[in-house]
Length: 385
Image (cartoon, rainbow, N blue to C red):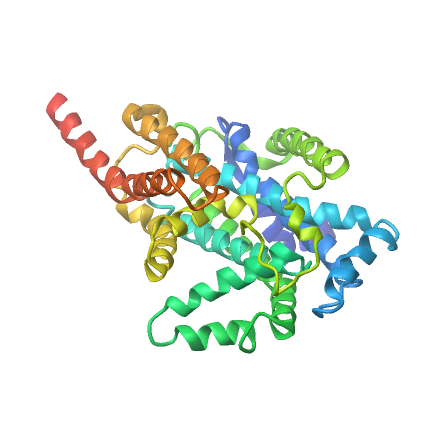
């Protein structure tokens, strides 16, 4: 008995017990609260498959594309590792987008969880950076030209733009030095994501999980294990089936066919597009005719997300009790889908105009609707009282 008690008092065991086993969980959590743990599984899968892929990948402009083909054709199970990793990035973003929109709907960013939301947005930004530099590594046509277009955006920054671009490239163009540093960063950043994810979980558990009612109840809670892990397990199995469909039956559905063409600096693709999970932000970038303005707009996207807890003026968290906000939320969701569609269309009328209108609404929601609606609700409640 004494030995068992001493084991339970060990710091690591206590940490796991407090945050994963006896963590007090609201009894009314729905399946939408399982996307956080699902994101953790996606991150773990990406790290594991990435480590094994790195054993066979060669970060050199003359050999990178061939090494990927070698993995696909000659390495035992290499096709499975490659498709798991490539489609795993898409699955990761699907899960994270669902997790973020659930947080937006139920007000998970509201006080006292401001820090939880801010850390989550930082995680999202690091995910985007990690996925982008990972997309460059196969060194296909879309990889090369995507890297050229996106990294050259840094040149729009006043004073330090050109120096920053040359530092990103490791020279005066996207070449071997660029590929090497991107490979190093792509290997390193996922482990940084693990550390920040731990901070995210600890910050969340400081005040407890939000729930569909949006209340900060200190009662009516049960331990996470063995009750809620079963509910999460249902989501994991459903997600595994969804993931497996893409790996086994449609492994290239979410990719671009031009990336199966070796990178050629002398041949520009007719239409350069990023991966689907970047398309909404890419559409906002393209909606601004000025290069610096486009970069500023991208920055404003993340500033708006980071500032959301402080822009919010509503005392009610859940949109279930905010009918106007519920309508605006679904408009925001539709707007993001529209931006994603615009991002993969040619830069011509009427797509440019539609993208500009959709971009305006995106910022209108965060910078105008969120702070103004809370004040309107307070005034209405005061009037009714």
